[in-house]
Length: 421
Figure (cartoon, rainbow, N blue to C red):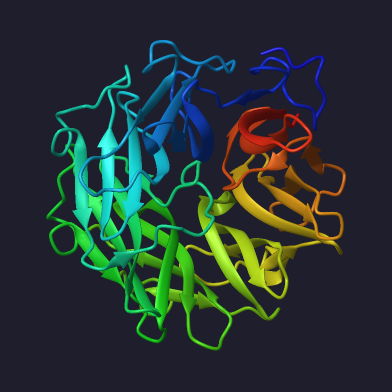
């Protein structure tokens, strides 16, 4: 990649059309992208919804080459469209890529069902997965179809789910019982798409903190502790009349709560800023500390970073152990993804909204390992934030979803690549 002619904050001229790729297909009037992923061959997957003439809403999955060209070896001109079948929604919310063979997994949420479809490398369904290429997970209760904006699992995308080191898939779903009380599900699938009956109850663990009305899980991370794989989860707990609090918790490989973590398996972090906390994404910091990355909600919209020790206690080396909120006067931030650099510094991608002018941009900030903002680094890109944020760090660049203006009244979605170093 030739970045000599581009500076940090520029779009990468070696990607697509001057740094961006607009989603386009003759029979599609609207694309709504949700997620990004990149495979080991540096091919780029983008997934979401498409409104097609004469057909209506379907999912779409686009594969690009590393330089932003539609991959002609995938689907038709790089695009795959379709539905999951039956009453399963077209609401495609995640795209993951298997590590062993680069096959993409498309994840949908709707009604009382979560579903996973596996594709072959040519874009056709892998009929050996689940039933005719689709694994269906009934939840037994209503699921939200307008999921909250969340950050990526791994290094990018808008994703609740994690591909595990043994090739199995860990899924998260939010379910509602009635109008207010709800809980979350953690599901583990075998490599063939069947429920793993060695986890929870026939592959499913239901999670609800006993002291709160609702438990919303957002991020997941696989850890190896004392030669045993464990699952760390982040999200929020909710109680009527109170601000939502950040939640960290840990599960054993069996799906049972790991009561050796924090307070009998749970760690609740109360906001002192009169705002809700949502750590959407989990990554490992230096010295195996845990970093929750996300946003606040209500009185003070800001980017959110929470650093904890492996046992759930405060990391006093990071902002004195307190949650770190990033906002600046009229600016409203939301962090969607993060990357730990070799020197321990933290790169975060997100959106920055000027509440006075209405101008919003994709942006990257950098923090030291102890939570100090690097004021010499801040970067923003000339692309507005997308309907749902997603990003993927790629060395000296970052891929992200955005919205650009094509005439006086029309805006369209795109994927862009910006230079960060």
